[in-house]
Length: 189
Ligand SMILES: Cc1cc2nc3c(=O)[nH]c(=O)nc-3n(C[C@H](O)[C@H](O)[C@H](O)COP(=O)(O)O)c2cc1C
Image (tube, rainbow, N blue to C red; front, side):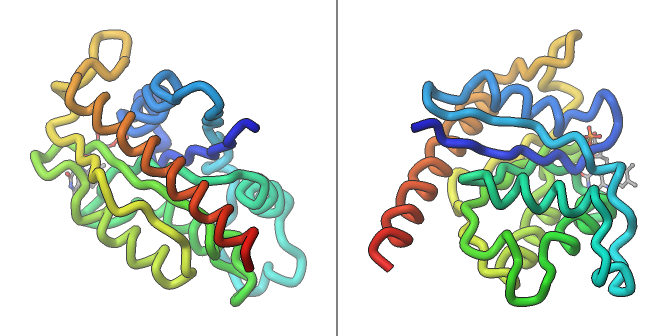
């Protein structure tokens, strides 16, 4: 059976190094693991409780895709030591309705690329806090911090750094283990 992973980039720009990390993850995925990249981030309206009675179609589509996925893989930049607004907005939509979030019990893996040598470590910690609130199951290791991102890609925008590629392969493997563990827990509940 194919394991389906929905990949979400916190970077909107066409040349986003974080979206490029997700493309590398697609190449590195082992047989039986399918990674699809979500492309609707810019179509989501700002989260607004007044819209919750009649949820926008883009949000419903996103929730359905997350619900249908076995796991979620996030690659995000760090903006001002935290989560970029667009991605935080997406997560706020996914966190609702309160107590019925599609993220609850979902297997999640996080990685990120940034210009600084710290490679999104602060933003990833903030993401872990958000996933803690919704009781998602976040893979803890390996931690993938792609610092000095301007040195890690070739001219075509492909991830050329072998250490980062190995870490991403390890993160996908850990996510698959988390998904399988989750399935066993679900089956015995
Ligand atoms: C508004 C803004 C804030 C930023 N803040 C940080 C930061 O806190 N830490 C960091 O490492 N890089 C920071 N950067 C630089 C980003 O790491 C860099 O632009 C990165 O390439 C963005 O990710 P992307 O390639 O996926 O677009 C910031 C960039 C912008 C535009």
